[in-house]
Length: 106
Image (tube, rainbow, N blue to C red; front, side, top):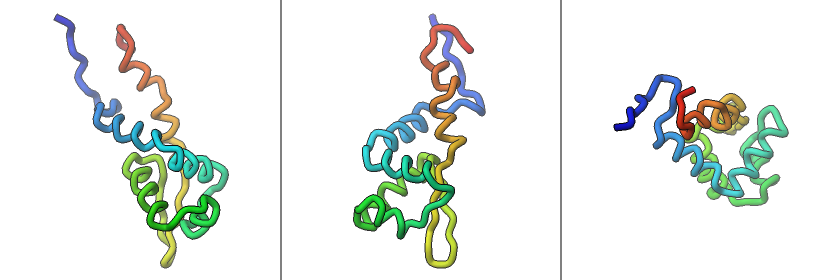
């Protein structure tokens, strides 16, 4: 019988990874993340113009990216500003994820 490793505090569950990879599996969301990586913070009104998509579709994609923790939101007055959560983006591509698929533990 193969021992099953239990989840630690620093290891995400498979369901959380599924949510993150679902967020990355869409070209428009990758475009949004790319655009955010080019700026410190971007107003949603500017993203609508830059990406040339309706506000409703942009909101849908931003919601998915927020739920996956890939972006951060700050509200200033009536406008929302978004920026890339570099720590989380780097985490998904980290050694920790690779360890999930190795025969030996890290």
